[in-house]
Length: 114
Image 1 (cartoon, rainbow, N blue to C red):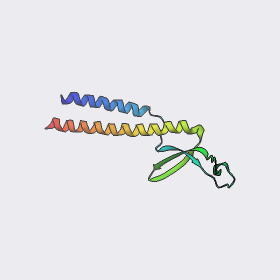
Image 2: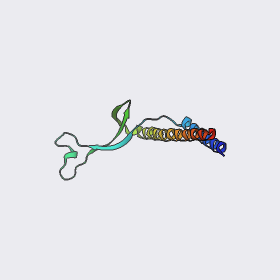
Image 3: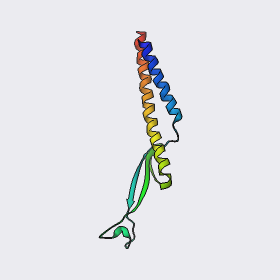
Image 4: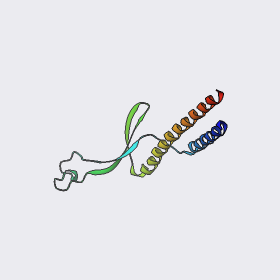
């Protein structure tokens, strides 16, 4: 019974590894859409009746090597950047799942040796 369960867990690990291998470029963070008000007194963004803020601007915020960072993302790079962020999130999910299954296998082996 334990050997069969271990084999199933190992197959799951192999599927995770395959999916990890196929992940494309990645980067951590989250993307926000922002609108700004400028410093010009006569600008449309300061119209008292119908203000129109500048934007949208897209900003990627993330922590890398212990430093919080944010950078603007050009609209033509938005889709690519969103895909990279999604790949990173999936990477994190898959690696956690990989560790979980590995711990389960280790526990099964320990139980088997008793």
